[in-house]
Image (cartoon, rainbow over all chains, first blue to last red):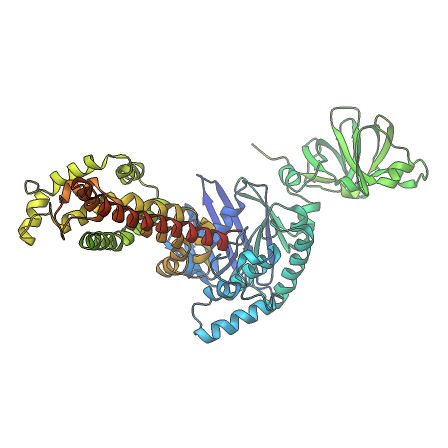
Length: 369
Length: 223
């Protein structure tokens, strides 16, 4: 049987910060809210915690009604069982690591407060650092104290506001791994806000893409990445190759739908919900555009071949990013391993041909209005 | 050395700080975190004693505390004596002209507490009052101590307002600052010198103490 949704959130308002959000998160699941800065994702987190009250909304957490604007229910922050990690941790600077955690253990007796706080520090691999003040701890250690403080309340939901943005790459990787391990151990729902696509893909069980306060798509990271609902989502999750095309015909036997784009006819996976002649958006990941290699021709070259010339060639370490002019205005973006670029003597202005992997072409309905 | 005057000065300074500090904290916290109509006007009103000549302030206080004013009559009705030319009168005057010193440092302190830290307190389950006692006041502590010391030091040094409202009554309204003036008028430069030196030392010490405390607090806390 499927778990009941542990936390369900619906928020709605026209201004000052527009919100149109619906999301839910199960116990043991990490829901990542992904959006550019200013998209309202932190406001969503603040609304869940009770630090912000939207014009209209409904929040339920483990059978407990936290917010129901229609019924006039609005629990104050301190009565919502949340564990919150702020972007810059917001540790109390005048309290030691241990005292910071003990603040969140209001209902314990003085003796058991200390024992519990010490146990939490141990869980975070912070043994022996309890007597230090926040300014005596590194960024990663501060983050662990902040997480321990958030967990001390035995939260119904863990809320993380870009918790890894203030530490270096190496610490970030370590912290992400620890968070995933902890999640398996404790099993709360986790709502994690970030603008970092890679971080989101790594840790999300479910990815919720937000723009201008609106939930655009909420699904598994794979589904969102490979099958974005529309061109807006595709662009927010970092796709470059987003184009418009016209549906030509369907071939059910071959399992393909044919589209016409930029003077080329392309085969895409069969999508009968699009009518012939319908205008459609489509997207293809940069790594699904395959370079035809002069040194090693292959039979796959008959798949959606396109010829053009190199407009721009940018080596970025192991990979080289190529913008390819295709005859008309629109350029295709692809990445090839840098050694392949070198061996094929790719250079700016040079001619190349590529194949667009037909299975990776994803058709999307046009956004109306 | 006029020990009686020093006694009046210290009593006046101590009581002023004792009464004004809690009031200052209350006003400062409101001003730091709330936005309301008239906020800037109130801030201007609070800052006014800083720029007004003490004689102007003293004049208005004398008028409004005098027997012809409603406040003066009311006080005389219950206390049986006049507010002007009394210790209670200069205490009230001292409280009023010290308001900027009691409010502004505390307000700066509250303003420097990041909003996230206050929100974190609530998100850990602390409700209003425990948040004030356990998070806000300890973080604003350097400002509160500064305000207290500044109030004391400034009261010890005040001259014009006290003279206008209290006159120069030995054991009642004659503070050290007035006693110095009194000594100079009587050509007793030695007496004036002793008391001036005492006042100088007290002022220097208290300001040094403020710098010491705020420096240590700043060192201890922020990243």
